[in-house]
Image (cartoon, rainbow, N blue to C red; front, side, top):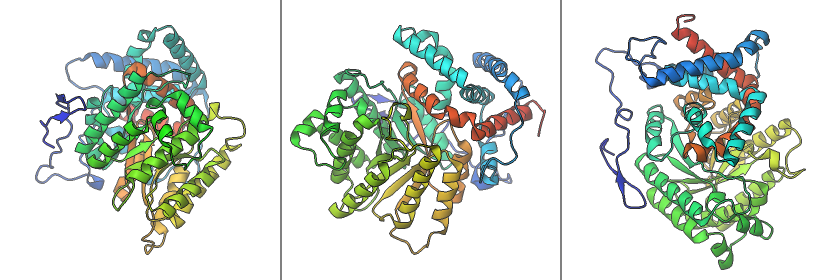
Length: 487
């Protein structure tokens, strides 16, 4: 599409994406050399440059000072990072990719990301921040945290406030061979009557806008959260009566807003944009599966890329058998299954006994499911491996690389990470020939805060563990390089 082209949203209005400074990729000048992997980044700026002062530099310095105050004591008092962090954690491809990604960040973004990692690695900071945000939301005082959150956590983990805001990010990632998965991330806590019909319609409209943007950037996907589009009470009601691969009756379709979801999916299929439906809490699981499988029956027919993807949470003990059931059902009925594999996101509210007892058993379930799909999965499947776990990534890469090349019936695979996390994985894999996605959420700051809170609760352990320690030290090293303390 032309840089100055216009996009049309679902209301018929046109708008001009703000991408003029991003989506132009210039050819290198004659005689210049190209950096490895065919990428031509501009030289990263030093920390101090002779430029006119901008307000955001004041924010950057404030972030640096706050980050130093939070992490200074622990950096001086904590033991040094172990030299061995587990298989593949220090793989040279990951290290080079991380350095390349950090080198491209503006100093403002580098300091903001460092501050976010330092905060998220400390449980007391995360817990205090979450309590404060929930208190403000309950008393309609979001203005107390929104300005600060906008330039730190929201900026780091979210692509923008609107679909138009994320276009620059999509094109920047595309220039590096990374595809995007757009997600409207307004969430609620599942309380009865938490969302109105107007809220459901707003979520559908935002998703339709995302589909229109994705149409203009081939390879882009759109994520869908069904609990934002369907009545909470109806999801809970049908969760008790439906099996995961059940055929919906007309009454169920009406109650579960199926016909409007079908129209949305039809628009995505016509645009050539796959939609990836989120997995959600267990008290929605059967109803959500039944809706998604019904849509897959309708739209994942024929040859070519699949339109409908379901998400499978491998931290649930029931998931491996459900995944096998869905594979068998798709083969028996003659439609293609799209599957995104994750570990899980709602552990704190799942019923007792539903989740594997240890992280090790969850990891084993995840890696076993990946191995089964690579070795024996039908060619009619399309699979997204969504994980930040280096060991799982390396295991999958090894299986994909060394499985018999004659296995033409093997599913197609892609790999995905959240925006703002695990850039070493994300940037290392495209040069090796793998399809990689970044999950890019967007919403207004106040609307996105439940999503950010949930991500903080889910990933605090990871960001505070060995992998997070490596990420923090790499950012400190980049800051040191820019002030001339390291090379």
